[in-house]
Image (cartoon, rainbow over all chains, first blue to last red):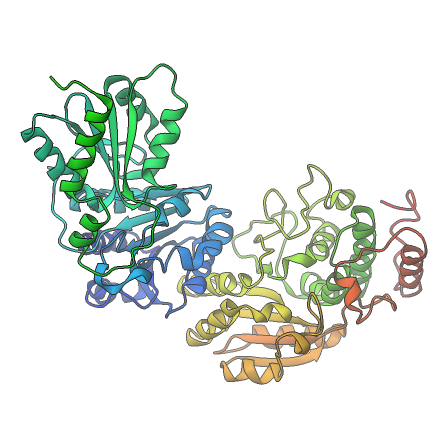
Length: 313
Length: 285
């Protein structure tokens, strides 16, 4: 996903000399094509994310479109006030890019697990929040935030993600994408955990439950229209995110649903259950331990359905 | 208008604004006044008729708590109506205690949380250099503000990229919120720290307008380094009982003896050629 991002950004930056990429001294082997091809549009700010973020705001106010790049929590939590006061309040064209949303850096430990970023970034007014689910979405999301005026946050996975979509839907900031139709259950997924959601929906189908599947590459503004429609149509809406269940994608969906009148659907939020991930392991392993792997998704969905006595036939 | 006249007006407005609003930071406002007056009056390329002109010099007050001084300077230079100054801190006002750019002509950047301004200014200076633009970027910091680590991150980066179009001024009144700086977190030897970070450092009397003018002129002609002007100032400058007294970081001039005495002292200092701002109209704004 990060390679897709960099490749796309190189294409954009070759066309627009006002596009600039600043890294917080990360991206070895990943950003190299950018700095080799576009050295004048690349800056290493060193290991200093607060300065990097304010500096980017300053450049943006001089007319640049500035992408800041780092991993995990460094470009977001480390510089949250700089994002709030200097970027968002000034409507600065700064695009904050995090590589490693969720448990991408699973074996590196808790400091490198980004599991609260969506909720924290979502809480800031005038920040648009995107978490693409596969390589196709990542490319579209990169172009979309470039074209979108103002401060944006782009949460990426790392590498090895698949292309799940066929090229190309009508990608728009704030719009969910329907992957498949279904009955009774709708699964909503955001970010790179999309592959688990896809697998879970296939497993459920084999077990006689045929869920609809949607991906939400934008977490803010949330696609309330799709949520409203689904809340009317389905009994259960399942949100899947590689993130704390508090304040993130599932919360955004729930906020919309809580204000609806006369709809029948309830919500099952799947994500990290308000914990820090204190053990070490691969992304795949940690997703399973913390209850968001495809098998855990299937178990939880089945559990809720039987508890609710929802008749699937 | 001379810079001395502008400075006097800023001080006079500062006393009124904090008195009316019962607002804080009169000590900082009086301390930074001359730095701002000389910059706006004699150095910076700014135009009240065209506040967003692309070639304007950028000015950021990183120590946003002295916002009244910038508002007063902008109003006196014609960016907006002087009468609006009396709304400082008031319900519905756009003149917040800390500097805000929203809707206020001439304010380049909003501040208030310390330690942001130098980074933003460095980014502006870097962006301007990338496009071969000729304007300068001025940023005014407090000395206590230099407790913030981000200031030193920015100091490193500004030197690394040789941002000679960046001028930082430190209002070095040697006091911060609760005590003298060196009793809080030792900053000394202050100039040496900045020199070690690669900056061109100019150490001056921050109330002497000739020294300020010279320092600014030297700073903007720097060939390959960012410049730091250490403007040695007195917190509360101009009102004897406020000078160098930590009480006046937060305290406002109260009705009665405090206010009357502050106004009387300023009147004594009034430069020739201007009348008192508040007697010709209704005593006060």
